[in-house]
Length: 147
Length: 142
Image 1 (cartoon, rainbow over the protein chains, first blue to last red):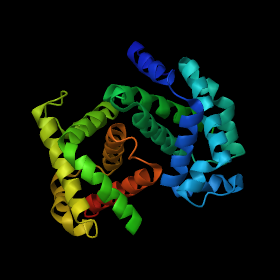
Image 2: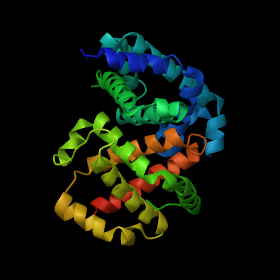
Image 3: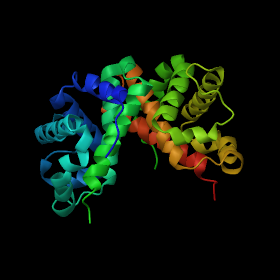
Image 4: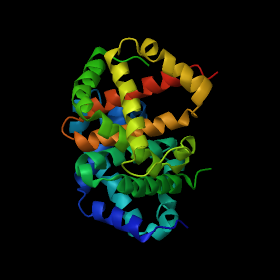
């Protein structure tokens, strides 16, 4: 079980309270597909991903980004049992989706950058530390059931 | 990995803004690095790493100056950073994994200060550029 200090919980909660899950989720996924184009391999059925503009405007990207970040919200609600929270999703990503767990780390880092751009000075180094810990724990949990 | 003309242009344009706060951004990036990735501190046992320390600011400036050189000579990063490449290979020997971590922290600092300029395209170009710089700095390791 991961230990979260009171400060870490507060830093995560205070940022999360101001996050638009739909906007941040869409932006994070779009940036993942733009900055690391090879990640597009998992989204053949998403339609037009031919340019940054196409990706940003793609409704499937937006919808899926929102789905992914909504799931993050579940982790934040259950900080003391992230592994349990993601158990089924981990199996899904391994057995059905066949996603290399490295991609969870890439998306986690992109999310941190998106938060930095949205929150500016408020996203202090201490804040970044708490969020890097969170995205790392989420990535680890999503990879946990891989076999 | 070569940068396209558009990517080079994106790097150069943002650099003009970043350069005006290079020292502060350098120090902030290192602060983010040491806080989020504590093992990176092992390379600086001789430093005062407290926030705002003179050594932190000095080293941040050094790093950003080198990046500035790479931007100035973006068509020949290898040539511009040849000496630094040797320094890292034979003297400093910083494990290659750490360049990715510092690059990420630099991107966070730039994104936090210039959110409207840090579009996805600019983000992609900078990620690629810093990756190129990192490659050059580690290419003589073995």
